[in-house]
Image (cartoon, rainbow, N blue to C red; front, top):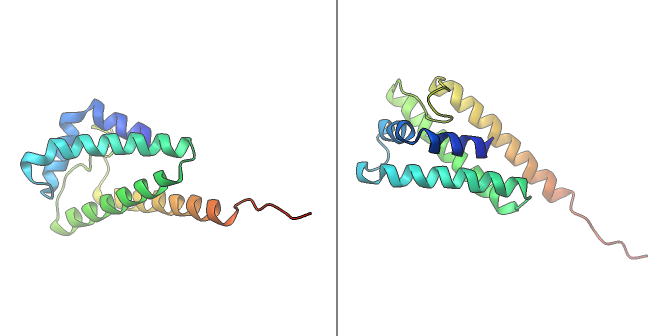
Length: 125
């Protein structure tokens, strides 16, 4: 999913950069650079999950917390904008996307927790 989201953002880059700009959180001259960084981080994080690289869980979790914070900020301001999550074909309200991102974050936490508690131990026979 993260790889798909990153590729979708890159494929519809101008629309995604506009969505980032619409939130008014990122300094205007830095919007395009920020948008590129988000695309790359999502793709790299998604590949890291596929390769079972634990650091990718942290990266994607931090990104999701930031995404949720930005969406809440937009909702508080009463913005009626697209979140830019999966390109122009994917349009949902900010509140719906907050819920979706929170569910994904819970899933990442579950993966982190189960990976940590089920570590392999060498038995002494």
